[in-house]
Length: 356
Image (cartoon, rainbow, N blue to C red; front, side, top):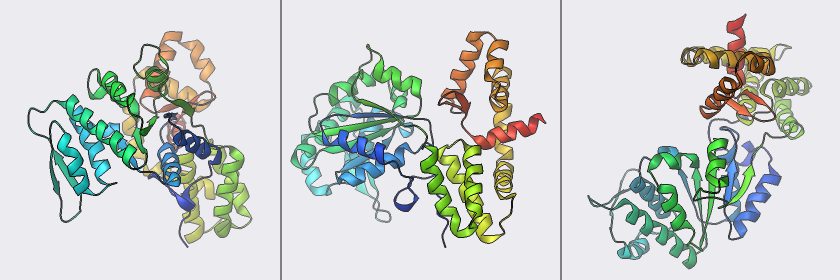
């Protein structure tokens, strides 16, 4: 019997937690000519959700994580490599004879991975324009290609003015749909909601929230029952109470509990035992993180752990409080749902342990 809980990678099939409403919204948007902007904190399952939705459409799709991109030419290369995975190379080479800078293409015989290199002194913008035009032509010839750009807020770090250039290229395409994923809400809303931004209202805005308690409860309980019997219901309630229905950490904790129940024993302390094991495993990492916070951020994190956010807000200037929250959100340690909260519930437990 295999562990039914999976975390840390893109999931699908039996590991995917039901998000039928969100899947349908993505599907409907991609069936039309529009683009989609999907925003949520990290580890909420954006990539898994979009991959499942796109696979269900049966359309060619390219997935790019902009955190891995350091320049315009590299973005063009990654897009082109993605296209090579979708279509036979020889016909593509014919299409590429119209490129103003034709890349050298090689294939690793051991892995079949494709490597691209453009001539030295290539104009980066021209290269990207040619690749984007190719994508549009292929979409007209075959089926509209879906381009998924993950962590899109990083676009502003790649090159000055690239947002204007990219928008100019995209807006003339009629045969491609774009899905922009982002984990930094303030940066993503600035890109897509600020009137002076090149990408202002370029796509339908969608926020991915936590999985509803009732849906997650059924999902977790049903998968714990084979190894926990009647104890699964109580354990599931304790899991969701601890993780606050955060998708990644719920899967992580449920996975640890399943392992204990399947290979050791089931008792009243099983959830607490699983939490302590995970916290202990990451003790060194949490200590290293804590040492890198300034005093203000430490005080705010402690207040969030104790549920005393409002008290903390009153004890420091509003500008200091807001700056700390924004800083911690940008770094991914704090997320805002109904209110600011620690992203990692195991880190929350570690901080509380240090305070005792």
